[in-house]
Amino acid sequence: MGIYPPSLENLIEQFSRLPGIGQRSATRVALHVLRSNQNLAEGLARSLLEVKEKIRFCSVCFNLTDDDPCPICRDENRANGSICVVEGPGDQLALEESGGFRGRYHVLHGALSPLDGIGPEDLKISKLLTRLEQERIEEVILATNPTTAGQATAAFLARILLENYTRIKITRIALGIPMGGDLKYMDRMTLEHSLRNRMPVTP
Ligand SMILES: [Zn+2]
Image (tube, rainbow, N blue to C red):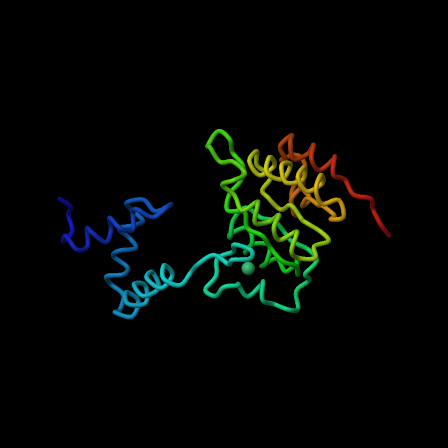
């Protein structure tokens, strides 16, 4: 038995099932909903149901979308020649928000991790290869994360692509010192990578 009325206890319980929300945060959010006007509760409830009803995967790039194909795949003004391969929809969003890429994306929905039982067939890899057959792709940018799984995924994809698609340029996003970083606080692997991936200085 909780200290609050059962309906409020129930709401706290539902919120606390969300990732990153403990009992205290769940209680705070639930009490906020209770104190706020009816619009907030109605808007929240509607959005929760709508996101489950409407959001699906784009059948081309496997990004999250309300419409299939997604707006990026439909956009005629984006460069068709390059595909940026990412692990998840959050990574795609971060790159898109950076504004530095105007090509297409491909979302793998994970990274290779044999210890967790995640193999190539669990990711959207064969769909990527199909796209390389069907679309006129000149460059594949491997933008998986610089983690053990992300690096293994990039290496795996690079091997397949280099063997089978010799006319396509394969690139990997640069790994190294972050903007505003300080060398003396960098870990050994980051320093090693940034040295190995050093760039020529151009005028
Ligand atoms: Zn798409």
